[in-house]
Image (cartoon, rainbow, N blue to C red; front, side):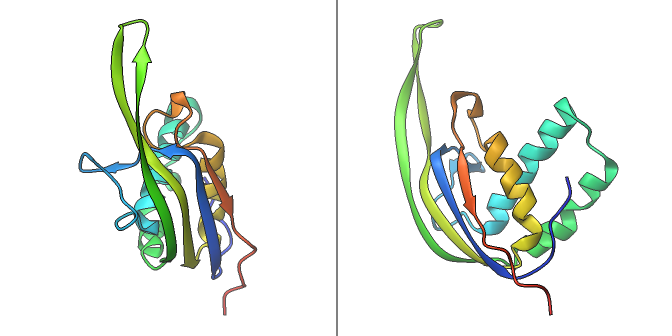
Length: 149
C-alpha cells in the first residue's frame, strides 16, 4: 500500500451501495463520519485483505500513525447521507437478517492527494460489513491535487 503524492485538494466520495460502517457497535451517521473515520475503515479493509490474500509488509502498518494524523486535518465540506435499512432472507437457515448502511455522498477538502490511491483501492474492494453481499461500493471523484507549497 503506497500513499499518493502530497497536495491539497477536494474529494467527492459517493456510496453507490449501502456502506455498513460502524463505530462502537453503532452505524455511523453523517455527523460522525468524518474523513479520519472513513480512512480508518479503508485502511483496516486494505490491510486485512493484504494480510489474508497478499503481502502485508511492516512498512504498511508503520505508515498508519502518520496517515491517521494527516487524515484528521482533512475537513468535511458537505455530507448528504441517509440510512438504508432492510432485511435479507437466508434460505439456508430460513431466517431473516437485518441489514443497514449509509447511502449518499461526502465532500472533503484538505491534503487528500496522499489518500487517493488508498481510496481508489477501496473502491475496488468495497468497505464495511457484508461486502460479500455487495455492500460498501464507493466511487471516488478526486481532481488532481495542487502541489505542496
